Image (tube, rainbow, N blue to C red; front, side, top):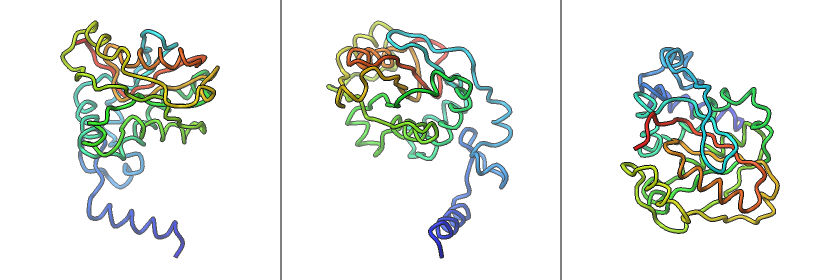
Length: 226
């Protein structure tokens, strides 16, 4: 049997043992909904947003959904519940959002907001890196780990905007050769955009290292600043 045939049987068995559920509402999917991993009801209800993300040091940003309801629960399962397969679904939705945007789709490379080591050990994977990897594959550009954390920061939740900026300032550094990003257009990915403090600091570091332009892509955006 071919490798493709073996993969089909494995997927069939897994679907039988663990029927796939909607990425957002977590209901069982009908057979014709399984490929996209989103049920018809959520596909109809979740409207991809068109307003841009704005912040310091990056040129422009886009996101798909407000961070609330099923979207919030979905991202929580993605980050803390081991649902790594959601990265492919989110990447597909972000591609829907940017497919008419030649500037972003013409980027040279994609990178991600780095997670801290404690979270990486606890989760066992870097959720933002997974998202970047899927997007890179679809766009046909390299995914490069450009950034790393230099120190542990406080949890951002509950901090005011100025406290968030102070918390992240100086906590990010370049970890790739400068020539990889010099003069390049870079996409920076993350799951959630709140005040933009983290995205702004990552973008600042990338620009200081020579990046020509930085565009931020996130799955969701909070509706208020904490």
